[in-house]
Length: 288
Image (tube, rainbow, N blue to C red; front, side, top):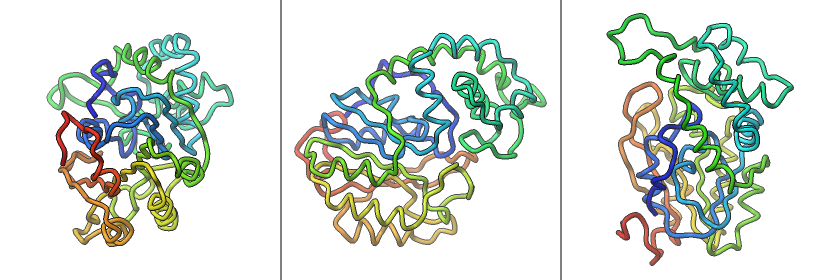
């Protein structure tokens, strides 16, 4: 499949583990499909750039993430107007760590958390307030860089065809095991031993979750892709994923990708046999 060329020009959220810059490569591995299921939606950075299909289901346990997207979809103008009037202030950053009971206000705060934090969201960490000390380091200060948030209007439109759920990812996968025309795109929190930042999410994954997801995906009649690091931070092989996927006939494809810390890592996608053996066209009609 190809990118949606009417897609937003930048992500809605600065989100740990974001795949925004890798979206073209990721989407290029997807076979044609009419149903798309995203059990670990996160910042929706791939989905916002993907073509719309007949049925899209996005799921995530993090309530602040989904509150932001639902408020943006349903109360677009109110939220964007508030954000345009929000100063780039360290007190706004500190306030963003506190969840508000008002959905509109919490969506505003969560956006501030993701963009004002050095490490980005979704965790209210103590990484610090994004600020610039000199004009030598970058062209625009963070405050000036975010003055124009008109891309959120495009994001809001793109959210309309998506149905949102907030369930355990395993339950979402179970719902679609028999759907031959479904693509399940799994981008779970990467295994902690493969990451530099160990506490990057409000709902961290466990090794058992990765095992359970793999066991379910092996039963799937449709298409499945899983992303992660093929190698641990220390350079050793991600043995768990090799056992869960490659030993079961899945194909791994690799690409050097930028990390949140500004470095480079080899990122991997594991493709189920149904996916890489599909006769349906993928990006530019070229098979891998």
